[in-house]
Image (cartoon, rainbow, N blue to C red; front, side, top):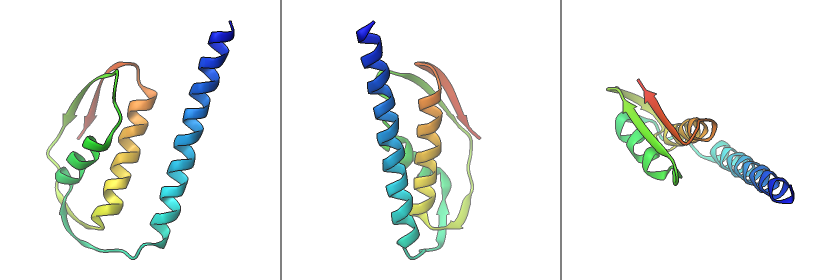
Length: 100
């Protein structure tokens, strides 16, 4: 019983840490000057996938062909990291995640 409570507390603390980290990242983004350039989104997505923490999970990534867009590459990459990490967090240990 005590072990279960400790595991739940630890998991909640980790979620809180991720939330605080995301809020700190968001606050930094608001201070940056935009650097707009034509950017292939598939390369940003690839960089975002490399940054994800997926240890202990079997994830099959299905990535469709993405286009290029006029954007700030750093900000869009951060969006990809946030979206993909959320997808990983809410799914079971073995899952297929598609980006199309």
